[in-house]
Amino acid sequence: MNRKIYVQSGAIAAVVIALAMLPASVTKAAASNPIPMIDYPAPQQIAAPAIETAQASQLQNLPPRYVPQAPTQGAPDQTLTLPQAAPQSSPPPAEELPRPQGQEGTLEVPTSERQPQTTVGRIQVTATDDTGRWIQDLRKQDLTVYEDGIQRPVLGLQRDIDMPVSIGIVVDTSGSMSWKLAAAEAALQHFVRTLNPSDQAFLIAFSDRTFLLQDFTVDPAALDRAIGILHANGETALYDAVVQGLQKVEQGRWPKKALLVMTDGMDNKSSNSLNDAIQAARRAGVLIYTVGLGTAGGSSMGTSPMTITPMFGGGGMRFGHRHQMGGGEDERVDAATLQSLSDETGATTFVMNPRVTDMSALDAHFQSISAELREQYTVRYASAGGARPHQIRVEGSRPGVEVRAPKWAADAGS
Image (cartoon, rainbow, N blue to C red; front, top):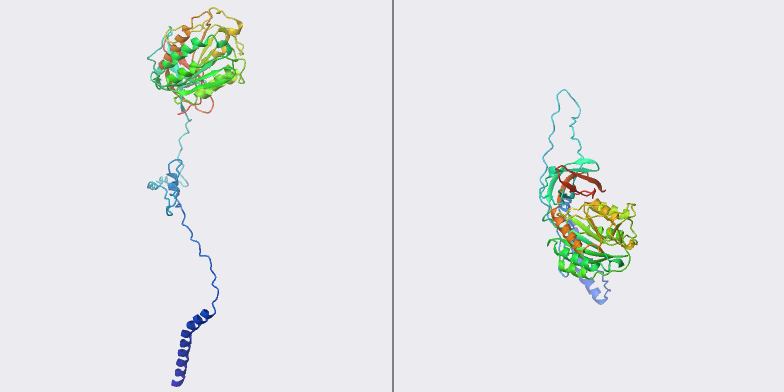
């Protein structure tokens, strides 16, 4: 028994000794017969994600158009962390209404009736007495506003005495204007010098094409220089100039906008129609003051020839049918079209024949327009809103007060 155990122990010891000697022999053999070593590529380092995954609540609280800052070149890899979201308080548990005794099933809670959505509409209103002088103490209860035939509540009334205006000046420079331009330039330069410091204005000249001579500016000197380079040539694309002038003035900074259009002829070159110009005026919600230099003539609207006689008593205008002012057929002004554009927007029309009328009347009328812009009121009313223009009617309830307002209002906004 003892001998058997001894033999096994001796065998184990021999195996251990042999294993210990094996590395030395292998090393010696490798030294005498070297084996080529194979260079395996080192495992690539997998970079950590550059941006942490943000929770949905974090994404909702990012500022608009948030752009994460990229790490600086050459800097070690950094983890970009989105702004921390403000802690959200958990909503209180829903309160269950007690179920009435003796009844089973769900309890129905009555819902309130859905109210029609309204927005705030804004229009400019001019109020004068029977002599044409402006009313300076108008109250909102003195006005009634109808939108698409439905009376709407008047929410507020503000006098525009200090309200800045975005103004577009659109001047006819067709060939027939050559001998009238000097007086027109002087009147326009006087007009821009009477604007308020915050008012912005641009100048467009048109004949058979339309040219922007001066973009929006608050600098009267820049407008003076642009007015000074007007020259006459070509035909009359009046409707195109009105449409393009409206598109430009709608880009103005201020909510109150006006367009001053001066021409001495009838349209003979436009790609737009008269209806295009009228529809553009309805959509824009812009006051369009029109000035015609020449004899009052008919229009493509089929209106009979008319004479528009101005009466100055503080800026109000009276339309009369007194006498046909002199002038040849080539000097007729489309007075009916001009009056239609102004009536649509609540502004005025002035037609004069420069051959028989002192051109200083033109300067006086421009000054009247400048003053009227400060004597108007902005009326806020509850509008049905929507993307289309609304038909507007404004009535005055104070005796002896006449109210002039646009016939259409652009889509209302809050």
